Structures are given as structure tokens and as C-alpha cells.
Length: 268
Image 1 (cartoon, rainbow, N blue to C red):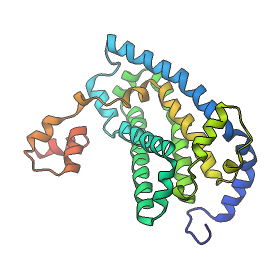
Image 2: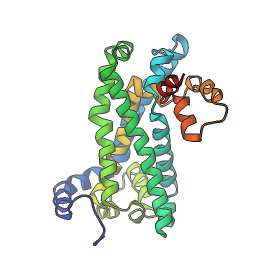
Image 3: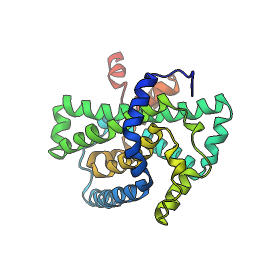
Image 4: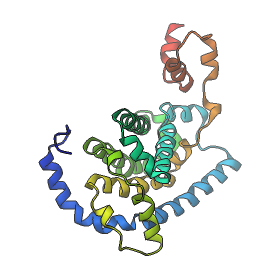
């Protein structure tokens, strides 16, 4: 992609690619196995957590829960997951988006919007935990494990995704068979067709490796497994109704999640 503006010098990208490409070429064909091994225990742990909460109630009171959800991490998580599943299931769709700059930009901006919701949602949880003693008390000792998972796994994964987005044009590198074929080959123990994977840009390979493993780690965090499930009972619908239709969609969403509660209270 010569001549395309990049946020990172091309020489630096080449040096990084030369350093990690041989390692990634060995690991990437095994990504399906790694993803399954990571997801299955985490899913079982999350299901056990949901069963316990269903019988004993949430480990968070409504106000603390609302604080941690004030930036909807779950919206970004489910949005990104949906985009990836659609493109994974219909890889030819990415090629159709690549056919025009407008369609490609729409796909990229939508994906980035979901990524930013996740990033700011995670940042909100970290700040609430660090600055609010009541939140730390409610989360207890396991809260530190939640923060460790966010700091060491999910935030770096988002960084890799954003970094990769700034250096390659996603829709131009997928083919109609690469993603499906890589999983089919893995589970039929066929490693003779890895040339297409090896030809991909290094940050696409990083994306293929990091994203499923990072997504699986959500299931190992008590807090993250909790906040990815929407809780409509926490929405401040009464605050929106009190405005009598005098607010726009963005302000209504802010009031509903409690982001602008202080401003609203200040008016009265």
C-alpha cells in the first residue's frame, strides 16, 4: 500500500514485521485450538456465576452497577462480536465493502465506534475502581483481579486492534476462503494450506491471534462477565420522561445511563 498515509513510519513497521512474522507464521494456524481452549473454561465459569447470581442476587447494588455501566462497555463488546461473526461467516462481504471507499469507510468507522465504546467503558471501570472507595468496597478483593485482567489483556488487545487498523485496510486483505479455511484446516489437522495466512500483513495476524483470546478473557472476570449482560432495570427512563421530549437522542442516552445526572441535578 505504497503512498498511503500511515501513523507509524514504514521502516518501523517493516522491522516489527521481520521480527515477529516467523513466530506468527507458526502460531496462527493453531489459533482455532487456542480460542476453544480459552473459551470453554471461561464460559463454564461465567455460566456458574450467572446461576449463583440468579439464586442469590447480584454482587453489586444498583447504584454501583450503574456507575460501572455509565459508559456501556457491553454495547461495544456485542457490536464488535457481531461485526466479526458476520465477516467471519460471510468473508466475501468484506471484499464487497472494499469495492468502494464509502462502503469501506462505513465498515471501518462502525468497527472503530464499537472499539471506542469498549475502550472507554474499560477506562470508566478502572477510574471508578481507582477513585471511588465505595466501588472498591463493593468489588472486594476480586476487583483487583478484574483490574488486572483489564490492564494486562483487554487494553493491550484493543491497542493491537487500533494499531492494526491504522496500518492496513482490513477489507482489502480478506479473501472469500481464508478465515473459513483456516478453521476447517485446523480441525481436520490439515496444515498444508497456510500460504494465504503467511501472506497476510503482520498486524492482521496479530489481530487473528489476540482478539479471540482477549474476548475469552472477558469470561474470566467476574465484573466484565457481569457488565456485558444488559440490565434494563438500571436505565433511568424516568429521567428521560421528566424532560418531556425536550432533549435529543444523545442527551436522552446520557440521562438514561446517568452520565449527565450531575448536570441535571445542578439545574434544579
